[in-house]
Length: 219
Image (cartoon, rainbow, N blue to C red; front, side):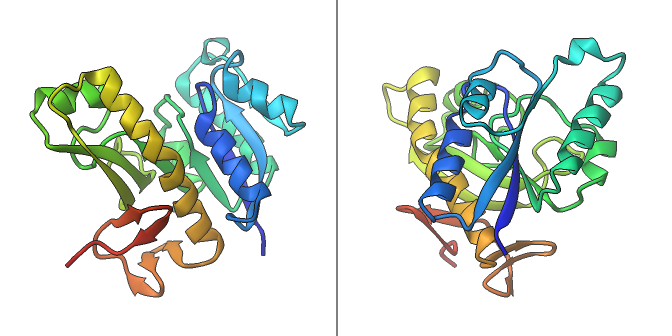
């Protein structure tokens, strides 16, 4: 059965565009059924509307509370009946009540090698910490920030001349194929979220991106 994807995004929408393209060319057995955003003027919203996709976009400032915003957005998400919710550059913390509506059906891409550097400013923090490696992680969303099971990671070296901007650019190059590979693996039932499994075996450690495919971590 083709995977129905709801995508959450706050920025220019490059990960959203990568997912749409992967669905179109058959790498993902699925389709994007809606784009949801806390930034009505974002590039992601513009891309969705240009493509004729349903796009829900509201400013949190229009709602009395964080919980009210989450409830409205996740009501809209529920209406498109997604099989998987993908946070693809969504920069707002999602409350526990909203997450509880879709347990183990929501993933997020985060620009660090979790559990290192949860939260913001990950590239500068990697430089400040003297990390030799940096990268991106796809994890299951739980109420604790960036603390859900890490499904897969992509790694890049930290070079001597790097600053936060050059490091961010290098990580972005691997973010797109990592997210696409994870969603593709879910669509073909190689990767399961509840409980986390890879090819019918418990996921003991994060998968690694090798080229454009996921492989088990070296033992």
